Amino acid sequence: MTENEISYKIRGAIFNIYNKVGTGLLESAYEAALAYELVKEGLDVKTQVGLPFVYEEIKLDVGYRLDILVENKVVIEVKSVDELANVHYKQLLTYLKLSDKKLGILVNFNTDKIDTSIKRIVNNL
Image (cartoon, rainbow, N blue to C red; front, side, top):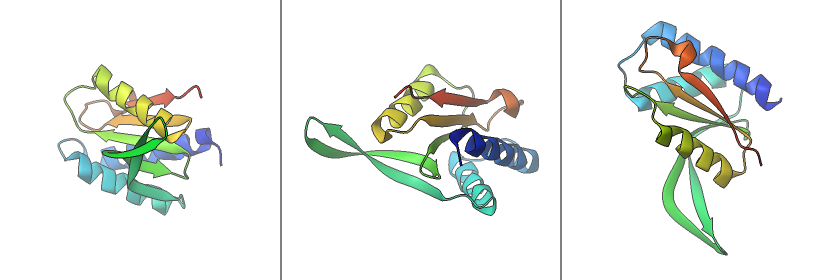
């Protein structure tokens, strides 16, 4: 399955969750619901995946975690904030680079319009 096919399923799951529960929950609740929805779709899903930082030849465990990794290809960063900030985009791009993944989805569930709060971030490896 390609990143684009996975992304399509992710968007569908995000819309399902948003339409059922709306805004106002903690990020952890949306993350759990999204992981559940994606597993129902038959996708391989891992949550809170540790991500080491490799500096020169040493691997440093500094606490980076991917919210959700789908099919070992797409990283999802879940937010529930008033407004997405530049740092959120940079955070996801950094995670993509550190994990050597091509596509990331940044989603903010704390919004009146979920369709404009789903952002695709591409790592130009």
